[in-house]
Image 1 (cartoon, one colour):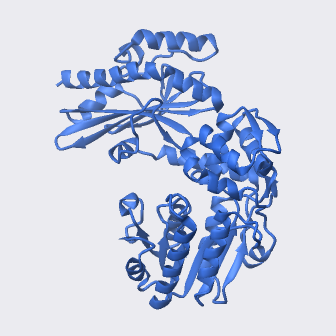
Image 2: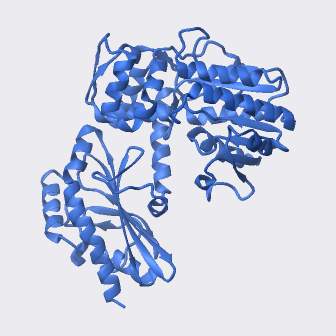
Image 3: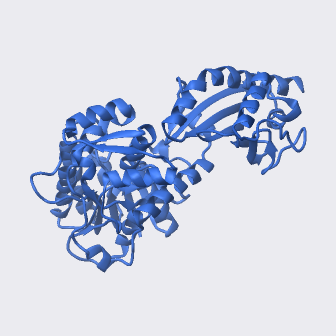
Length: 477
C-alpha cells in the first residue's frame, strides 16, 4: 500500500508514521519542514517538502497514492484557523480526487452536531464534511482528549496538576469526556487502511471511561503521588479561564483560549460503530495515563541532547529549556582532543577524583542529603578511572556508559523529582564538542521551586565543571 501522510511532524502523525512503517507500508510524508523528520523515518519512507495548503504541492504529494491521511490543522498558526483549515481541506480533496486516491482517512473531534459547538470543534466537523463531500471513500474518526506523552491536551492537563496544589475549578472541568490512549487512536487509524471499500463513514472512538476533565487531573495526580485540592466555582468562564491559563502556563497561551472554548462541550461516544467494525478494545484511563508516563521515559532514554542543541531547541535562559515535563540545563565546549581523551576525563568524575569544580559544594550537598535519609557523597566509585552501567558514583548511579561517546548519571539523592546528568562527546572536523546536560523532572510545585532556587548554583558549578573537564582532557595530551 502506498500511503500519503500529512501532519507527520505533529504528535499523532509522528506516532502513526512509526506504526505504518512497522506494518510494511510505503509512506510518503508531506512536510513544510522536512528537516524535522531527518533521521527519524525508515529508509524507504519518502519525505517530500511542501505546504499542505498549496494546490501544486498537494498534487505532487497525491500522485501514485492509494490512501491518504489528513492530520493537518491550523490552530497554532495565529491566523483565522477555521478559514485556513477549510481552504486546505478543500484543496486536499480536489488534489486527491484528481490523482485517483482511493481513500481518505481523517482524525476529527467528538461533539454533538449543534450550534453550541466551539470554534475548534466546529472546524473539526467542517473539515470532515468537506472531505466526505468529495465523493471519495472517506473514513473519519472522532476522538476526545488523547492521552499520551506529547498530546497537547494531555500536556496541558498535567502541567496544571504539576504546578497548582490548589486549583480553582471552573464549571467546564465537570464536562463529560471520553479520553483515549494514543496507542488506541493510532491502532484505529492504521486499521482503517484495511477496511473494505464503502461510502463515507464516521467512527466515534474513546476509552471505556466516561469521566470529567477534573477526574483526568485527579488520576494523573494520583499516579504522580501528588495531593491536589480542587475547588469548584461557577463564575470562571472560558474567557477568564484562558487568561488564568496564560498566567499559569504561558507556553500554552497561544491556543489556550481556542482549546478551553471546546471544553464546555461534552465529548463522549454516542455510537458503537467503531467497536462493531474493529477488533480494537481501548485502554481505560488509568492504564492510558500510566502508559503516557512510560512513553515519555522511553523517549527520554533515547534522546540525544546534543542533537537538540545543534537544532537550537535548548535555549539558554533562567531555569533552562522545557522538554515536556523536564527542565534542561545544557552547556557545551569545543576542545582539540580525541573523543577517547575527552571521554576519559569525563569518566574520572566523582569519588576521590572530585567533580572538577566547587568540591566543597558537592560535599555540603551530600551532607544535607544524608541528613534527610539520602546516600550523600560517601559511596564513592568502584574504580578511579573506569565506569560501567550500574555503578554507584557518589550520590548518582551510572545509567548509560557508552565509551567514548556517552555517559548518563541518574540522581539517587533525595529530590522533589528525578534528576540526571549526561555527557556526550561529538567529533567534528578534528575537534570534539563536549555536551553537558543536567535534566530535572520536577514533582509538583515543590520540584519547580527547588529547581529555580538552585539555578544560580548550577550556573556556578556546572559551568566550572565543564571547563575543568576540558582542561583535564587537554592537559593529558
